[in-house]
Every structure is written in structure tokens, then in C-alpha cells.
Length: 183
Image (cartoon, rainbow, N blue to C red; front, side, top):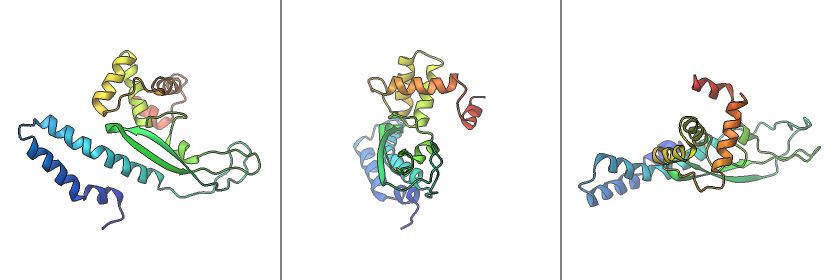
């Protein structure tokens, strides 16, 4: 078996067998219903692969953004986000500390563009903001739920996430590579 997480997960015969069993139990299913059944089975797989690939970065040792001191390993911390299909994306990332000023941080959070305190992946947060710029937020939340399977209304972080992303857009602090996608 391969070490590539994408190949390993998608090559799992249990995934196909489960979908085929569902199809036999639902012979009159429309193509939309079959797509939905497939997506429901792929969402947790997608989240697992995404977490593995996102965390697969070398530890560069880094410097403290506060004082410039050399960061020292201090273990790892977990962070759980929601991704497409309303699947949990469990990220385990290094959490170094600076012995000089005692700053603790996760450099991977910044590299991945994670919003502080958000329970949504940056892509979902961006989708919510882009839709929210076109329609009222309640409708944007419904559209995000329809297209991604993630319900954001009722979440304690939906509006703060929307506001933080919107502030980045309004204040022109949006990263250049993200801003380029708006034009």
C-alpha cells in the first residue's frame, strides 16, 4: 500500500462497497441523490486527507515574531475546524514557545491562513463572505449550507468569522494571492 494519503484513502474498497450497497438499497435514486450519497461518504475522507497534507510541513525552527528569539518545541495542540460536507478537520500542529519572551504560537496557523478563533476553514469563511457581499448574511449562510453541507448559522463563530474575514477584505489586508482571485 502507498504512503500517499490521497491514494490510500480513495483506494479503500470499503468506500466503493458502501456506496454500491447504498445504491442497491435505493434503486430509484436520482443522480443528484447518488452524488449526495457519494459526497457524504467522501467528506470525512477528504477532511482526513486535508489534515494529513496540511500538517506535512518541515519544522523550520523559526523565530519569534515578538522578539526575534529562536523558538523551541513545546509539543503539539489540536484544532478542529469544519470543512466541506460538515466534516471535522482535526489539525494537530506544533506549538513552539519563545524562551526569551514566553510567546506561544502556532506558525502553521499563519501559514495555512487560519483565522483566530474560527471554526471554519479559510475557504468556507471566504465563501461565506463572498456570498454575504451579494445577499443578506442569512441567505449567504443558507447558500453555503446548500453548496458545502456546512451549517454556519447558529454556530457561535459564524458571525465573528464573517466579520473578521469581511474586515480583512474591507481593510485591504487580504493576502495578495486571495485578493487576486476577486479580480
